[in-house]
Image 1 (tube, one colour):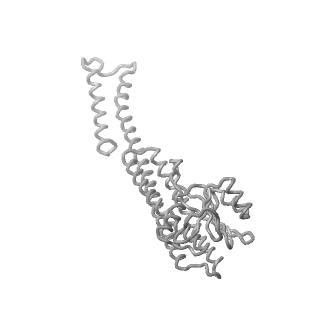
Image 2: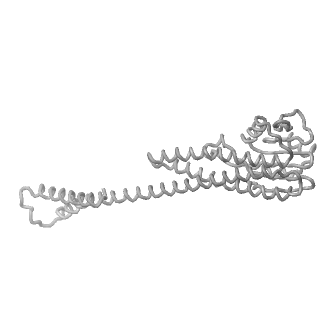
Image 3: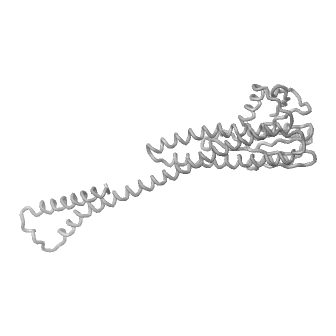
Amino acid sequence: MRTYLYCEAGFIEKKQWLPNSWINVTCPNSDDFNFLTQELNVPESFLNDIADSDERPHTETEGDWLLTILRIPVQNKQDKSYPFGTVPIGIITNNEIIISICYQQADMIADFIEHTRRKGIVVRNKLDLIFRLIYSSAVWFLKYLKQINVDIAAAEKELERSIRNEDLLRLMRLQKTLVYFNTSIRGNEVMIGKLRSIFQDTDYLDEELVEDVIIELKQAYNTVNIYSDILTGTMDAFASIISNNVNTIMKRMTSLSIILMLPTLIASFYGMNVDISIEEMPHAFLFIVLCSIALSGLAFAIFKRIRWF
């Protein structure tokens, strides 16, 4: 699906393409692909690069075309096991054409367009659009990080009640998400430096906007690191708790085995087919049982004193 957006006071959707307007393509189909390659002569290699879900942020040129690939956060509404992830978005530009292509549905793009209308933001050129998309991605990284922090707190409460494999796997998946976020934010930061070097001799560069984008990305990067450190510490703490619980159970089982062994040992001695000194006593059986109970009680008291129970 493609939309044609022209910047007036914010991006306004048009019915057809106009020079210097923004063509936003989401989940492109064959018709979109033919339009881009045949009517606009976009290099097919650019489209193939964007289609790779593992593509890293970078720039590439072919003729007068410039490809800029960023990574933006998305929420996986279909796959609950991995609630958040990142996907590549490609911005293809030349002197008159600005195209953004994303092969997955991302809430960030629609929110960005609505934000420009609400604030009446005027995007002067293609470089402004790229930097504002980077800025918007940093805002959405922070938004999803807040949700991840809520999920971490919920998982911790569940683990405080009872340690289950499902809750530990949930934390592990969140930790993996933070790694993806960290890598994507760092990649977008590197892209800022590359774009500044490409457009340093033009009047496209807005240093104030660039500074705002860098600050927002640094905040997102620091937040990712903080949550990652917290999650790592939480995982280590619960690993120690699990190990301690196992040790406690093993001590109790060992103590119980020793306590039960004492009566068994006495019964084994007196069950041998040999003469014993108290076999003529009228209450020998009761005496043996009481001795066994006394020894087991003594062993229990000792283990209780050293906190093995």
